[in-house]
Each structure stands twice: as structure tokens, then as C-alpha cells.
Length: 312
Ligand code: SIN
Image (cartoon, rainbow, N blue to C red):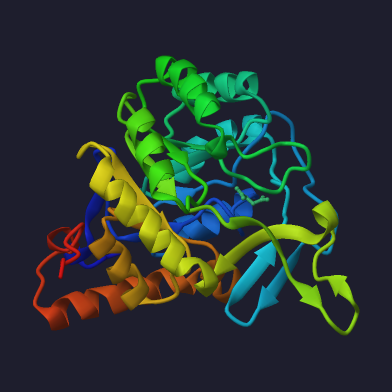
């Protein structure tokens, strides 16, 4: 599929033919869903975060569309890592990078999976430190010591470009502390943000939360979270080593959203809620809108925009 060269970018020195890929979120668990992404205009194929064993995920109802996005508590429904190991070769036949997302329920699980995928042809590994939807398992991204311990182990296990998916941070001191840790490790990228965990949406008619797992607490997604995603990308771009790329995630529905993420410092973006709501056509549409916007503004390439947010 021909893509506008203006949108070529890279993550961890892996070339991307366009700027927009799926997030490790909806519609990327099964082989069929992953091949659909492969055939679409997405820049890469990102798998659902895998665990050692297959998981059905949390009890239904676990997803609800909202006026400006969605709330979900999926609970990592996935095929188990061995299935994704088997799928990597056929997914690579789509001629785009394959990003394997890993979300072990313990450090030992993550070690097992990073080692296993190190021996595969996966293009990039994204370790998910931020799923808010597993009852009893705190988000690693909020435990700075655990992030440091985990990276010490995981970085020693692979030469592949390894990145981590972070939770949203809200205090400048947390950006400072996390960036200081990340800059000490040979990671290739971060993906930021995951959904805003443990939010609550109440239906006044039923007088219940709109989702069931974890007593109704779930991850808020979509347009609600875009300002937080932009802030996290920008704050980390100002603090991380230049060779750590940033993948922006959170509320990207159109080319303008993607452009704003580029200004904030994202080398590529991932879409979740718009993909869930609109299907795989969203990749072509957002890429096309972004290319048109770049052209209208006189930019020859997305690379001219990345990290160029103007100061007052
Ligand atoms: C989920 O499956 O619960 C969402 C994925 C994530 O938050 O990382």
C-alpha cells in the first residue's frame, strides 16, 4: 500500500511508513484482528498485551462508549504469549513492523516473555507497565522502584528495541523522577499514555456504574484524555535522552490530533478508542488528514514537526 512519504517516521530505528498505528488495546487480540490491521494503512501491527497463559479478560459489561470516548476494564483478554510467538512470522508478511506488547502478571512472567520474543523476529517489544484493570495488581508505572528493578532485568534479556507503556502522570516531580530512571536504561521508546485508570462513570437511571469489573472502576479513554496524553508526551520529550523515542497515545481521532502529538514530541501515535469505534479505516483517514494538514502548512515531512511545539 502506498503511503505519503511525508509521514515516514521511526521508533527505535525501525522505519514506519506512516505515522499512525493501533494501540495495544481493542481489536488486536486474535489472528484475524491482527491480519486486518496488517492489511490496513496502520504503520505497524501492535498485538494485544500478552500474558503467559491465555485470558478471557474481565466480566461483562466491561466496555462502554461515552460522549467523548469510552470507559473500559477489559482485563487483558489475549491468546497467551505462545500464540503471538507463532503469529509473528505471518504478521511480518504484511511488510510492516510487528510490535509485541507484553504484560506479565509478575516480573518473572515479563522475563520469560521478553526472552521468548527476543528469539523471534518481532520488530519492537513494548512492555506494558500500566494496565489498570487487573484486580489486586497495582500499575507498575506508579511504583518507581519496581520500574527500575524491572528495567534492570528486562534490558539485560534482549537486544531488540524495547519500550515501556507508561501510565499518565500528573505531577511535575513524577515526570522528573521517572525520566531520571528511564534515562539510565538502554530503552528505545516509551508509549504514553495508557488509559486513566480507576475512573468511575455512573448511570443515574440504573444507579449503577456502567461497567462491572473492579466495582465499576475502569480506564477512561478517548477525547477526555487527549490533554493529559499531550502533556505526558511533551513533559517526557523535554526530559528523556534524544535516542528514546516517544509514541503518543490518547484521544487521537483525526489528523489534527496527530499533528498536535507530533508538536508535543511524539515520533508516532497509537489509536485505540477511534479504532474501536470506527474500525481499521481510521488509520488511512487519520494519516490522510495529517498529510493534508502538513501540506497545507508547508511542511515536507512529519519529521520537521516532531517536538517543535513553540514557546511563548
Ligand atoms: C485491558 O485489557 O484491560 C486494557 C489494556 C491496558 O490497559 O493496558
